[in-house]
Length: 354
Image 1 (cartoon, rainbow, N blue to C red):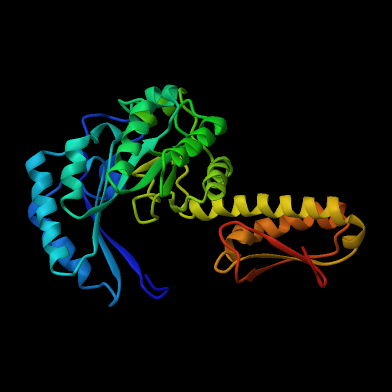
Image 2 (image 1 turned 120 degrees about the vertical axis):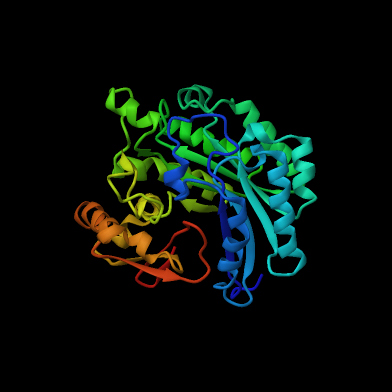
């Protein structure tokens, strides 16, 4: 795919139909914006989306909303057959779906691979069995590991989805979940800080004092910790937090939790702050005499300047307060640079490149 080629998903949401469980955090009607699924609407959804797709785009049909492989088998096959029509016509290049780990087996994988499916996203959420039980997921971590390895063995791309801030979870268990997802062979990941939707058991738990939702700062800090794991493992995170248009701003649908419309940027900004701080600390330890009273410039990858500076330039303010007062540095600047990837950092002291 060239740099100018755009990758676009056409989401087809199928809320609840394939899921027998009632996870404490889940309200698919709110998350998907869809209360009822109508099979007869799917072709119109796809055609409508294709009419807006720029030329030379790489387009996938994405069956989202919970447990695609758990819906009625005849319905799943009809939807896959319909999607195949668009692939055979050259209008769509691939298919992806999201599902639960306990709805993956050899028969299902055989069906998916015979219908142009290229990517399976698994809602792992946590690999801590106590957290899974508290969240009423209905499966254990061993099931997630088996499903991940089976998806990879079938030649499909694997996206591992996880959450931060679940009942019983802490930063240690969340880091372990991210490490496990990497070890299971994930090609990419999504990270969703927990949002407390109205009408869910999570809301009732919070009301009873059995669960404390994460505030924005804690959610950003804990999510940054798992982003760090994925980045160091070379596993791209393709989404952090729910989309801003998914009912996250209305008090009628959200009771609390990490419902900030820019939660992804907050978490990524926190990780940039940590990486920049680590780099400056290492530079001070190595070149303290050379940087005293001098300016330094921190370089981040192209397109990441806003995240690196932090929302409302919070990061640069914190960095200057920490190092320009007590670290002996005169001024700190942050700029973009070609050649950097992820959260990698480069620092220069005047004309000295570290």
